[in-house]
Amino acid sequence: MKAQVLLALGALMMTGAANASGQTLTGDAEAGATKAAVCAACHGVDGNAIDPQYPNLAGQHESYTARHLGFFKSGQRENAVMTGFVATLNEQDMADLGAYFATQTAKPQLADEAFVAQGQALYRGGRADLPACAACHGMAGQGNPGSVYPAIANQHAQYTADMLRRFRDGAVYGDKDDAHANIMAQVAKGLTDQEIEALASYIQGLSPAQR
Image (cartoon, rainbow, N blue to C red; front, side, top):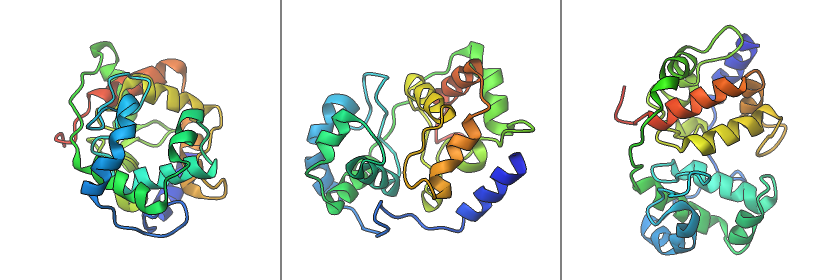
């Protein structure tokens, strides 16, 4: 499995980033700041969510945020709350929101020391049947916008663990024929509950300043 996944990752590195319709738009962060007012209740005024069930958006790549807003609007990602918020957004609005949150700074968080050793080993080195998270998301969790891999450093452990469990259960966000959409479902399906908790905690303590 690991060899097949790594071959898929190599192919993905050759692709460009675009929104859900395949178009590439440039967002306006200033316009996005105004539009982001409705996002603040869950994601924080500056994209740092207070409630750990919601993801931090601060510092996320513009293209990734815009792309996934498109998935919510199309129904490829299902969430009753988000569906209502994106209903009136057009693709420029999504790009603007992505640009705004990309200019914000994620607040540092701490990992649980009890999980650091296991989480770090999996994140940096993977195992025989599991590619290292760092291969796509970077050693410091900074992601790769050109290959549609999100920044994950400083993300709430609760949110990350929930997402990993969803991927393990077969959740796919986006076009099911798109390798980008399927890759995490493939990677996560062999993770145990403890490994998920360890990875989520370790990722929470990562900082883009680390290398």
